Image (cartoon, rainbow, N blue to C red; front, side, top):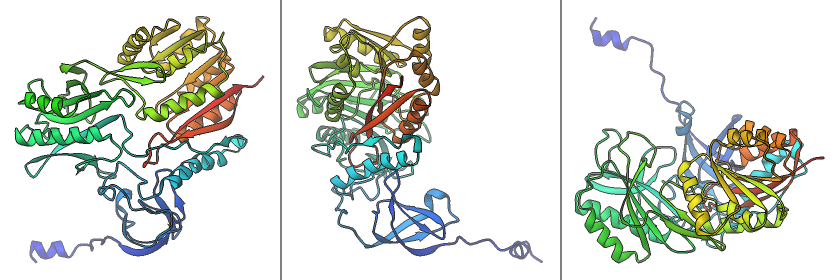
Length: 465
């Protein structure tokens, strides 16, 4: 018997199971995908809406992210709209362009309501209507676009949903119009001068990303080419084109990142033209924004949130306030005019340097900034005898470290103002705060990220006596 014959005589290879099924979408999950149930299995179908009848290909043997493929939307609902972006069906940057904007806001309010309903200890909390954007497109003040080589040409774009494949685009409708124009100019320059585009597999090439920061209230623009080395070929013609096309350009820089990593920015910035920073204004205060410093992506909504904070937090003129995760001081300065003293805590040294500069630029004298880990720095201050009447926390998506919540409870501050960019971790942390003697009555959501499933929120916790 031949070797080939022996090979065929083994056990049969299992074939992939594929089914074409119809589903009636029941609701949206917290990632903005419609879901339904089939044979007691919850099936999520991206870019579908509650009430719609859809046909999908279902392959339960595939990896989880590849089990579902939308084939047809048989019945639609009135809330569905034609996505303004031609790349929406393939791109993973936006999740909700097919849902009209009022319905997007309702969905984001329901995210909080459903999470609260699952926690009986938080049943007394009122979730207010989401504060929407006047213009729910072209709102991001920071753009970071990857560049890749595709069939011999440079492209830029966003990643396909649940993949690392870049979808080539000409413009993104949530980035500013200036950012889109700049990205096209950089792409055309890279193609004309044959600039080597970075390949993440081989680690070769020069141009990796382009970052654009625009101050929405001063219109100043910073362009950062993320490259693997200082010697970028033919960058002078690019600068000349940008200077003549973008009249509000204030800074052009190179960021050197030679590591094989998914982290966008390297540590070193080289200013090739203009200043090392741009200035943004929130209310009457101005802020220096550098390539590495954190600043809220939606300046318009940040102003609205700060106004609401001033209304509900109950700050008094003689208060001492800690601003934890203070960044470049965006919140600290708003507090400074209302209270006696503010202490800002931030782990990123570059942000603290910018915050100190911002304080001098704004002639503020009652804020003290400290570089350090949030929980451990706050614990040291407490043990050194520092007392705070109120504490403001604006943590990253992972929420507040348990140790910091405990330290805040030991400090016995009367009020805790919590600004959150993740509903799940907010609710988790509110439960923990309540266990340690704080109560929350209201949540005020703000739509910082229209067309996506993300939502920001503001709440105030009061210490129980």
